[in-house]
Image 1: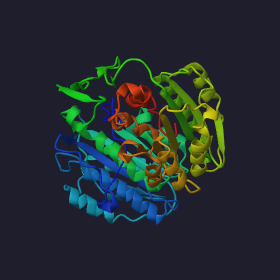
Image 2 (image 1 turned 120 degrees about the vertical axis):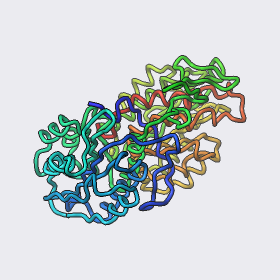
Image 3 (image 1 turned 30 degrees about the vertical axis):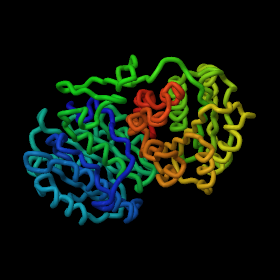
Image 4 (image 1 turned 90 degrees about the horizontal axis):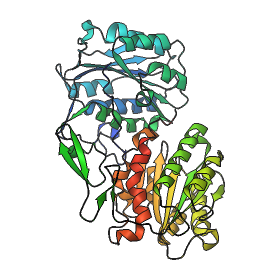
Length: 478
């Protein structure tokens, strides 16, 4: 089955969103991006568990995806199925031929507020929404059949068999789960590969962040370099249907063919990870965070003279897993990370930042005078304490602070933690699958006014994170 996501690596790291349709429009795709002709049907859960203001956020998501499409009878056709205990065909694939009329129709959708008959809704899509009489076209390599299912609960009927029938008919199924959704249900519905077709967000307040994924998914690109859909750290050189990477003067291309090195040899850096271990992270995702840490460690020149690594975990309290300099080789550091147990409980980010400034970078904890200090804060939620003073003190002390937020992390807090320039030091994503391009925001910015050889380890962290993240294509919940 042709899949619009075949071989597709999610390329958009969701940083800033301006106000517009329902408060946040998609980022412009540019003239180089035309969406593939598709028959697209949204299947949206409006059961009683979806509150009215949350349903409005689902409509924001729909509107953002629609805004990015080339809509028309010979382009992409869009339909919407609204379901609860019953199914309502809000509008079919043949109802609206313009983007403006589609967006107006989405605004008028009202929640049904009863049960959750997801299987019934999928069967309705098979029997009616994707029928010739409702405007569906004959499936071909040029026309995709796509259904995007959004749900927040456990269905009251079966979805496995009916989803299999839909897939067998050539309908590509994406499953988006919110909050306390049953994850097994999402997997039963979605097309393969699951890591490309299953998404999870903690709440409806961040569902609109996923719109960028589908904007990119429907986009046909003629120039990968111009569109930014490439892996090159510094220079992208277009070739027919592809690209190659190159480096700026004074840099050499690494063996991966993507990243660039400023010089040979290592240099001293003290790097401390500050990791959120609160209960909202969930055990399976905490294992992904540990994997993320170890892959970054693999990219560093770890030794007693060069890069030293420390690790701190926090929740309602702070626990130093190991200080700088305790381990002077990658093998021992990675083993210690793997042994780290999950704390759960609360999210005291301010307390953790105070620990970082007062203890982690103190000589008694292995920090070296005159050596660059780098802190990487990883969090998935709003801090339960005050962070401003501690964040300011860290930056005033000369520490290079990176803030990475996932899921329900508060972007204002990430910006407050991040060093200047903030855009180069803070990142947010709705789930792990959308952060594979993080390194493109980081290359060599720390060392712009310095001899790059003086902060080799930091540059290596920046330039290699993209390769490390690409293996984390599992979803936030898989």
